[in-house]
Length: 145
Image 1 (cartoon, rainbow, N blue to C red):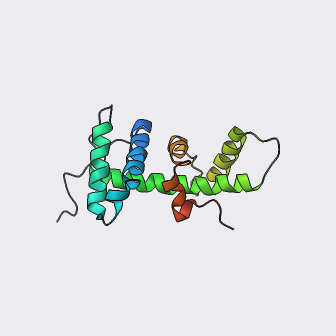
Image 2: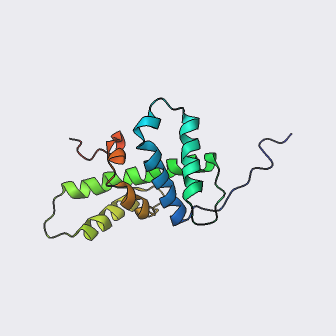
Image 3: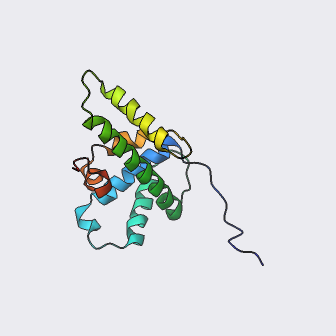
C-alpha cells in the first residue's frame, strides 16, 4: 500500500524575485483594512496567490500551498533575524555603521542556528523591516522590555 500522493513532487527553490514578490503580496493583502476583517484563511491566501500571479514578471507556477508554506519559512527566519538585529541595536555601540550592525546580526543568526546556516533572506528583511504591519506582529516588536 502506497502512502502519499504519487503526483506530489518537490518544486525548485524560491528565487530572490519570488521571495520579494511573496513578501510584497503579504504586505498588500495584510494591509487592506476592508478585506482583512473577517476573511477566512483560505480567502486570505487566495488573495495573496492572485496578487502574486498578477504581479509576477518571471516564470512561476507556485500554488497556494507552496506560497503559504514558503511564507512561513520567510516569516520565521526574518523574525529570528529581527531579534538578533534588535539585540545589536540595543548594544548601542558608537562608531558602528548600519552595515556593521546588519553584519553583526548575521553573525549572531548563524551562530544560533543549529546547522550554522547563514541568514539568506536579507532581501525580504529589507522590504519588511519598515512596514508597520510587519512591525506590529508580536514576534517583531523591537520595543520589548
